[in-house]
Amino acid sequence: MNNSPSMEDIVSLSKRRGFVFQASEIYGGLSGFYDYGPLGVELSNNLKKLWWDAMVHARDNVYGVDGAIIQNPMLWQASGHIAGFNDPMVEDTITHKRYRADQLAGVDSTDLEELAQLLKDKKSPDGNPLGQPRYFNMMMQTWIGPLQDDAAKAYLRPETAGSIFTNYLNVKETMRAKLPFGIAQIGKAFRNEISPRDFIFRVRELEQMEMQYFIDPKDQEVIYQQWRDFAWNFLIQELGIREESLSWHEHGEKERAHYAKAAHDIYFNFPQGPKELWGTHNRSDFDLTNHTKASGKDLSYLDEASNERFTPYVIESSVGLGRMLLAVLCDAYQRDNVGGDERIVLRLNPKLAPVKVAVSPLLKNKPELVELARKIYTKLKTEFGAVLWDDNGNIGKRYRRQDEIGTPYCVTVDFDSLEDQSVTLRDRDSAKQARISADDLINSIRTGLEGA
Ligand code: GAP
Image (cartoon, rainbow, N blue to C red; front, side, top):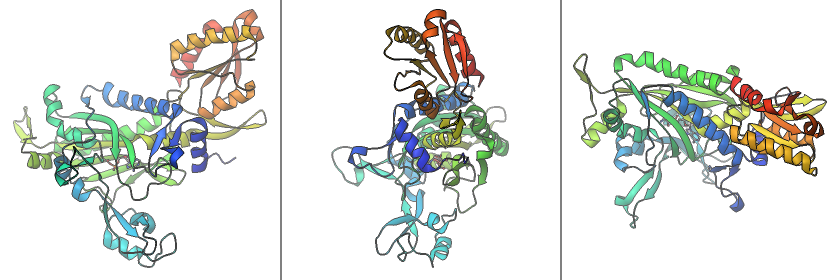
C-alpha cells in the first residue's frame, strides 16, 4: 500500500475534518489565504507551545516579544526589504499572467541574467511566449490615517524579525541581558507572493516562529551549527517527524536573501517534492549596522570582560507555522488495514493531537449508558481539556473518524461498564482494545500521552 499522501489527500482531510478551510470560502476563496478550523487551531496551538517551550522556557537567555504587524516604514527601508525583498517574475506576453521565473526555470536562483538564459526557449504554462524576467517586490502596502498619499504609506511586516531588531536595546536593557542572548517571536507576516501554491505551503498571509540570537562574531560558526542542530532535533524529537522525511539544503550565493551571509534550510518531503521547511541564517551584523545608521541609535555592544565594543552578529532560526503543520499532517498520514478494513490514520505525536481522547456510550438511546459515559467524559475533560464526546453512528465508524484526526485514545462505555465500572480503552496506532477500570483511566491515558 502506498503510504505517502498526495496533496489532494491532505486538502480533502483538512476540509472534511475541520483542520484548514479556504478563507472567504462562501465567496469563492481568496488566493493565498486560509482559515484554520477547530482542529487546525488546536494543532497549531500545540505546535506553538512546543516551539515556545523549547525556544524560550527551556533556556535562560531567550526572551519573547510580540511586536506590532505595522511598524515605522523606516524599519523596512533600513532592513533592505523595500529595495531588496524581491522575487523574480516573468509574464506571459499574451495572457499577462505572472509567474515565478525561478519556478518556471526549475532552479533555486534569483539571478535575472541566468533566468533569462534558462527561459529563452521556454513557453508559459498556457503555451505562450514569455517576457523578460524582472524583479517584483513582495511587500504588502497599506495606508495609515485618513489620507492615502505617500506620506501615509506603510507596510504589513514581511517577517517577524524586524521588530526583534528594533527591540534589541529594549530587551537587552530590561532583561539585563548579556551576549549571547536571543529574542523570539511568533506572529503573522505578509508577502505578496506572485504565485501562491500547494495549499498552505506558499501563502500570502503566514505565521512565523522566529528567533534572533545576538552573538560575538567570533562565535558565529559554532553557534550557527548549534541552531541548525536545534531545528533538526526539534522536528524529530519534539514533533515526531521521521528523519527520512528531512534533508539539508545549503543556499547558493545567488539564492540567499539580501541579508544572509550563510543559509541552511531543512527540506521536508512534501507531496510536491522536497521543499524548504525551516531556515537557519547567519545575518552577520547586517541588521544592527543598518538600523544604527538609519535610526542614529548606537546598537553596538560593550564586552565588559575584554572592554571591546562591536556590533553583534545575528544567527536566525526561522520557520513557518503553516508549513510545519502541513509537514506534520503529511508525515503522520497513513493508510492501513484493521481487521480487513482500510482506514486512514493520522499517527500524530500525542502531544500534537488536537483531540486527546474521545468518549462514547455504546448506544446513544440507552440513558444509563449515556449517564455513565457523560460522567467519565466530564472527568477526562477536566484532566486533559481536549476531550471529545462522540455518539454519532456505530462504534466502528466512530473509531475510524477519530483515527482520521489522530485521536490517540477512544473510551467506550457498554453494558458491562454498568456492572463492573470498567470501560474499553482503544489505542489509535495498534487499534487494540483493552478492558480497564474507570478509576485507572486517567493514569493510563496520561502515561500513554506523556510516554510517547
Ligand atoms: N526572517 C527570515 C525569513 O523570513 P524566509 O526563508 O523568507 O526567512 C522563513 O522565511 C520561513 O517562513 C520559511 O522557512 C518558511 O517556513 C516560511 N515561509 C516563508 N514564506 C512563506 C510563504 N509564502 N508561505 C508559507 N510559509 C512561508
